Amino acid sequence: MRRTKSEVNETIQLLLKVARAQFTEKGYAHAALEEIADEAHVTRGALYHHFKNKQGLFLAVLALVQTEIGQRVEAEADRYVDPWEQLLFGCRAFIATVVEPQNKRIMLVDGPSVAGWESWREMDEQNSMSHLREQLASMQQQGKMKAAPVDALTRALSGALNECSLWVAQMPDTDKGIEETMHVIAGMLQGFRV
Image (cartoon, rainbow, N blue to C red; front, side, top):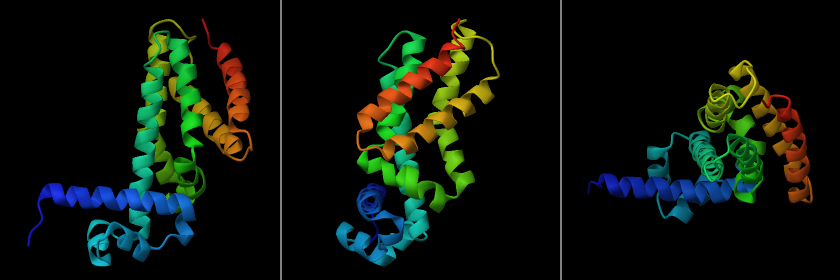
C-alpha cells in the first residue's frame, strides 16, 4: 500500500523527534538506530529509506536544531525596537538556547565532530550567523554602528558566542555564565557603537 505524502512527512517528523531525544540522552556514539526505529514504531528498513545511515539521521536532527535556534534568536531579537537591544538580546538568546539540555549535546558536543567542522560551520552560517550578519549590516546602514567589515565582525562575534556557549554549558550555574558572557559581549560591542 502506498503512503500519502502527509503520512511520509509524519513518519519523518516522528523519526526526527525520537532521534533527537536519543541523541540528547545518549549521545551520538551510544544511540542505536534499532532503538530509534522501535520507539518510532517503524521498521529499520523504513528508517533507512528516509535516512541513509545514522550519520544522515543525526545531520537531519542537527539541521533541525540549528534552524530552531536561529528562529528563536530572531524571535527574541524581534521583541525589541532598538537595534542595539535586538543585537544584545539576540546574542543572549543564542547562548541561552544553545546550552538548553535538548540542544547542548547535539550542537556543542556531537555536532562539530559528527558533521565535521566545515559542514557544522556551513549550517551555522545558514542559520544563526546569517541573522547576525543581517543585524550588523542593518545597524551600519542605519548609522547605529561604526563602519567595519561586516563579514569579519560577524565571524568574530559568532566565534565569541560559540566559544562562550561551550564555556557556559560546562558551568554549574548557566545563568551566571550567561550574565558574565553578556557583560563581556556588550563591552566588546561598545567599541562599535556610534
